[in-house]
Length: 374
Image 1 (cartoon, rainbow, N blue to C red):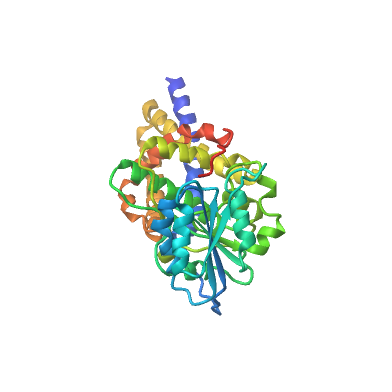
Image 2 (image 1 turned 30 degrees about the horizontal axis):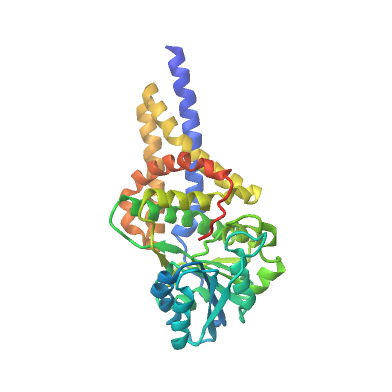
């Protein structure tokens, strides 16, 4: 009878360690977003802003989403730069038609591919080079601002010391399990990068809703160090240039952007594989922190089940419920802030899904990035 007892004790020790690591992440990092309160600014200043949107063969999205960007209620000088990257559809005509009504729309037409610069980086670089203003606000062709105050709210995140403002790029709510999984994964990613930024450890942003200073871009020679990688124009660039004190977040619901989610599992999995493939290029300490969180999550359920079946089910349940309680409080508060609170009632199931998620997409962490950015 000694062997099962020793096995149970060892399993319980490892389970408690893994659960403690998980709880530590929730309490030290994620609680920062959950209980975040924006500091009142001593002085308010409105900055001139250059909005930049790049697209290739995005005629339908330009027609549907650009008007939402162009009708922003922002009194200070601003422009909307649309980079049409070698499109063969009707994109040029859609942009030209909108230009007749909106004089602050600035088209940039690219008709040649950039050699040795892969993905979205060259069109985005051309957009930033064209920008007249110091603050550049980035989004995608398939995104629409959640309100007409998007520019106002995002630029309000800047102070004299701020060079980067991270926003939230949500997905539209649709019926079905896939939609809920996409939205939860998006929330979970945001919970991490926004919380890390609040902990003075910023490591990424999302190109659907991101602002930074033009001088920061050129001071770091743009995307030159990551030109060989198709992706990373958002997360890898921020991973390189963000540092304690220069990065802020903006999570006012009027500052969100909203995108159309993928409709099939295959489409979403291809998209996630492409996004996750850039994580292998993060700074080492960011990879270690993110990796420890993922590994501890991946070990939690196997250890929990093993502990329960080796005779320690009461202890296992106690550990599980303790972690679930901490997780539930943090998720509830954070989901409320990011307006994803309808997902909260499913969070125990989503947590089990995230266990599977790490194993499904683990190969993306060392997979060669796709050459397609669109």
